[in-house]
Image (cartoon, rainbow, N blue to C red; front, side, top):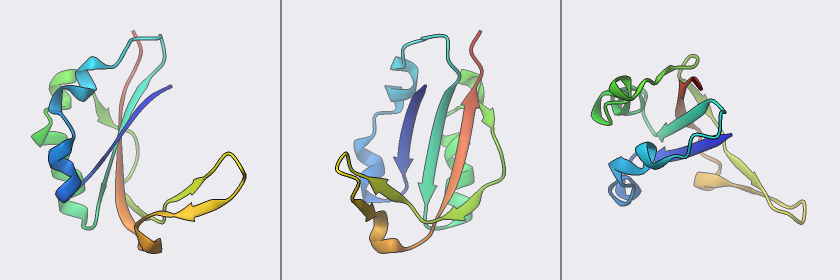
Length: 95
């Protein structure tokens, strides 16, 4: 499954808008998840990145989540110092 994660804030400028367009079509649905401290920036990123023009639609409700990464060793690390962020996932169905 192809997946991109974009976060709102200082790191957002490091993510190339063309990243989404460079995804390879492996026959799987493609998802983009936007993570933001507030609801509105998460929702507005859909328009800023013109995801609708690329065939994406919101996959479900935008909600607050804590994010945890599990390392290969099994150890887990909370992202963002454990603070909850809003996540909006957009999906483009495979053709």
